[in-house]
Structures are given as C-alpha cells and as structure tokens.
Length: 100
Image (cartoon, rainbow, N blue to C red; front, side, top):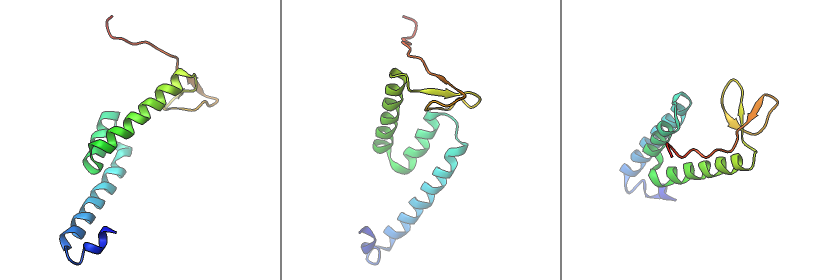
C-alpha cells in the first residue's frame, strides 16, 4: 500500500491526486478524441508508453485475427468495427502492400 507513505512524504499524496485527476480528465476526453494515434497519445500521457503500446498492439492483433477469420464486421452508418449485427458488413481480408 503506497498510501502508507503519505504521512511521511506528503508530496506523494499530492502527486497521486494530481495524476488521478489528469487520468480522469484524459479518459473523459477520449470520447471527443478522433483517431487511434490521438487516443494513444492521450493515454500515453497518463499511463506511460509501455502499457499503452502493449494494449494497442493486443487490440490490433485481435482485430487482425477477427478479420482473417471472417468475424470482423463494420456497422453501417457508424463504421464501428466489431461483431456481426443485422446491419453490418463483413470486413474482408486484404493484402495492402503499398505501391508494390
């Protein structure tokens, strides 16, 4: 329990609540943030590069696996990716390799 050090080091408590308030603000701002890179940058500020990069890599890997297995769908109207619904379209496999 790191809070047991707060009486001895009051700055630790102050810094914790400063971080917590920033993290809450960042998380609430995500709903207004557009684009995966911008969301990743926002989360990295609060949680650090290592954990955020690892999490985004897992999401990308899972999305890739869903697409390759035919389980990834795009919702009509919103473009959100996820499971199949009555109004979704399957995301097909692709091999985008640039100009080659």
